[in-house]
Length: 221
Ligand code: ADP
Image (cartoon, rainbow, N blue to C red):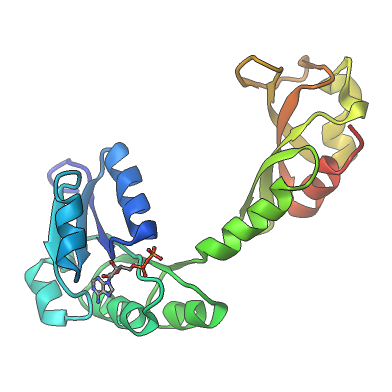
């Protein structure tokens, strides 16, 4: 940013997903330009967000007037209206927005978005569904999967790690996962080091390839 300030991120659509994106951006100190065709939604968030405008993202002329050509990132958070979602991505892409993140509700919708200029396609329901499927597994408290088959999980420590240091139990070589953090009951998380001794009931944060993490969290505990 030439002025040295925070970059502006444009958010299209102030539904549940879009407002969650906006709230988090504001917390991070990012300048947000939020637009929605629905005046009531725009008014509702006018106090919390830096710039809120009633505008139609499928209207090229309106987007140029808003100066979106100088916006380097946009999040298209339109869900159910696939036509509006697709046309918004095309319009922003043509208006010169550098990086477009678009929410898709189905695989086909996502494929279309990727082919017309969306740089990142987000599948919130799919990602959350997968995460919940891992969270309902015994002993797994949280799970996050990244692109390219890498994951991070929060789980209770398996029996084979109890009463010894991470170096002694050799989890990294035996399971090809890395223990990143450890949390004894009632205490905060700390970084794990080779000398860290694991006790029954401790929680671990582990990272590694998806299959390795899934095998590790399934060990007896
Ligand atoms: P969620 O499921 O996250 O609540 P919705 O699909 O319900 O998402 O909300 C999408 C929002 O996008 C709505 O507030 C709607 O008014 C807005 N919207 C739809 N089309 C456009 C458009 N062309 N330009 C700007 N905002 C739009």
